[in-house]
Length: 143
Image 1 (tube, rainbow, N blue to C red):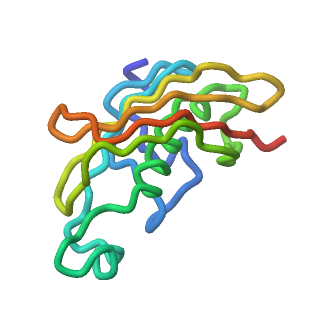
Image 2: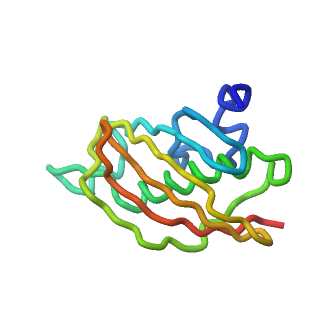
Image 3: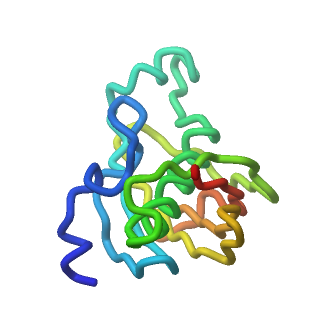
């Protein structure tokens, strides 16, 4: 497991900047769970319009970070390495407090099930130990 944690995020995920929302892997249990972090750049262009004078990270970006975190766990496996996990649905999303420029988000994702390439993952996001969002992510792995 330690060997995979030391891999670069880009060796596992197909995402690339500016749409890569994982800065580092904290822990990874292949096919089961992942803990990742994303350092929210203070100069992220999204903040210019969301919202002027009151910048907060859009909730959809937090959901994407949760999906990418779960994807790391799945795509690190031999069975799915090199494939793409497409976001298919988001269930029971909840946002508890805003994420601001300069925050570091910690995502904890757990794979609940994978059957015939369709899976579900549970994700929670935290800033400074306080939960900021949670959701169940549904994904489809390319053939």
